[in-house]
Length: 391
Image (cartoon, rainbow, N blue to C red; front, side, top):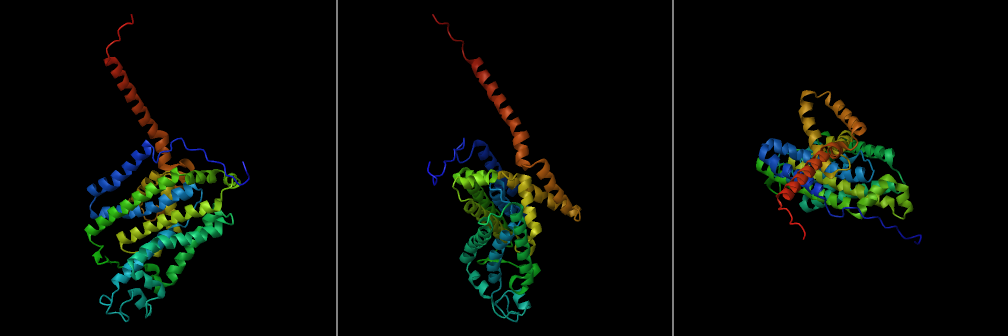
């Protein structure tokens, strides 16, 4: 073997896109999200679940970035916010046409700009008159941001707790920037009063139901893409990097480039979730960008199982259902409970719900299935006529 040649990675035992168990898990998630929730919940509750599912995009990206790549990012709220603000800027400009803003001092600009004595639309806002540009920006802006941050960190081999702290600092800086530039970003209130998308009223129950299914469809597509990454050679390199990064580097792989790619992919997933959040909820504010929401997003992944694509979805739903229920009854204690939940899961159940399922529940199903198959085989054998003795 020459010094420049790379060793071939041994193939995984099951080279199929999904195993039977994974197909069952995927179909279970799809059935609950696409069938059970729409059939059982009213418009308000369904929209609330749709909001929860936008966080699942972030959890899905963290499964790849943290669970498989070993890169703990505590600033995913930054990318969630970038995606949300890109769509919010387009929707706000559509809602700020000269007719709707004729009572302002300067008609044709967002109301918060008029309140802050800005008399012309800033140049940064002009491209967001186009929906196509806004959609491209949802993908490109977080990817470019993650590329810059990732290249600056990973090329210098910054990782572990240092990278986590740096991403926290970036989330804090962006929050301060958004709040401080009130005339350009809406400040602490964010961008609100979003009404229509190309003339289509997104505030009606029917529109929210359509947006829910669009959100669910995009989530299913991202789950399949994450599964593709997991089963590919790239996914195996990620797992190898997580365990023995130096060994992978000495084998000839550019570890920094692999890390940058998965970090950018997680950022794009988070931004798609942020864009769908803005469409379904009708606003975007810096309260979804900072350190606290970013840590909550990590908790969703930890509770569901940081190495489980499907567990991340269940973890997101479970934690948010609990947050909605208990924060109403114990508003002052909920954050302490959330922190205790994260510490408890990491210490006692490091693989989350997925680990509990695989360790305790799945073996019961396997034994039950094996017992039924053995029983069926014995009945079939008993029903066969006895063989004639050989002459």
